[in-house]
Length: 408
Image 1 (cartoon, rainbow, N blue to C red):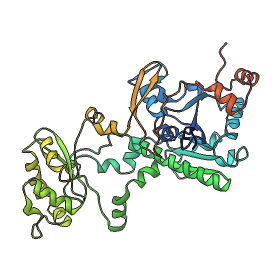
Image 2 (image 1 turned 180 degrees about the vertical axis):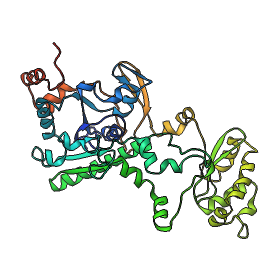
Image 3 (image 1 turned 180 degrees about the horizontal axis):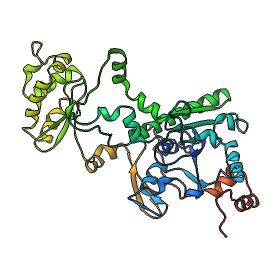
Image 4 (image 1 turned 30 degrees about the vertical axis):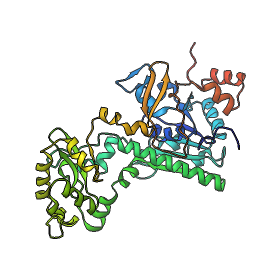
């Protein structure tokens, strides 16, 4: 039996990343946690990744926002707009498995990071470009931001109370979902490249992601003319009840996604007759047709007691339910710690930084966590071990401005 430490799932993967802000770094941080070597190329002319300067919790080039998306990564400052910087970039590509970026749709080709532009250096390179609108189509050159796409893709019209304005999600779900899609696309590309010996482009966009996540409401509309509308209390469009209810001291969610849950809920709330075959609320269709009257009845019932009271009845009956927590309450849930979802890293400015782990799990080993890199922190390691440069070559490139303007 070998006593060697188990290898991390992706520790043999090297990714050169021109990533910035949220969506791109969010996608690659899961790969970094699984052992992939993520080499962030940061533009020295703009101070590196803009995520370093996101308020309110930032100082100089450190921010808690940046820490969230960049743990377990390495950083080097390279100005790839200069011939010397471009040469360094290509030497890194020569010894990498993938090039990853999140830029505007027309930029990857402009700066020469598509497969066609890099395959002469490394035929197996996978070039994953996460852009706002993709690398084709009439919106290709438009900048893509989460809030804009939530509106464009119809999400905001679906969100909020019926008499309120269109509302965005409380989190940047297009950005984060786009990051997951990019990571999945990149890993699929790496698998194919390892199998076939040929790399490719992965043209991933936030727009495609947001549109695809319309899922069944889109299918209903395309095939049956369904017109979505907002429903009070964040209710499901067809499953009744499945929504937020206000108790005497707060809010909870109760959902009946199966008939058995409705039958149990009817007993719990003291209305067992509502689950009988001759009840006007007996089936999914019955409850949907009589949504307004049923929800009014349920609202009145749930208002008579506390959140804890209702949960104490619903949990033992295995009815899908839960409190509507604030962020502090959510982070204190004992299940979070039990699932090893709280991460601590040590930082020279912040001391111990606490954050959430990646939900991506592969095998039984718990990932190791290292703080996000300082800008250019790993330059010497990357230039010597990946690019293969000696001290004289590094000095020559530095003088030529490959790593940023030379200070006199």
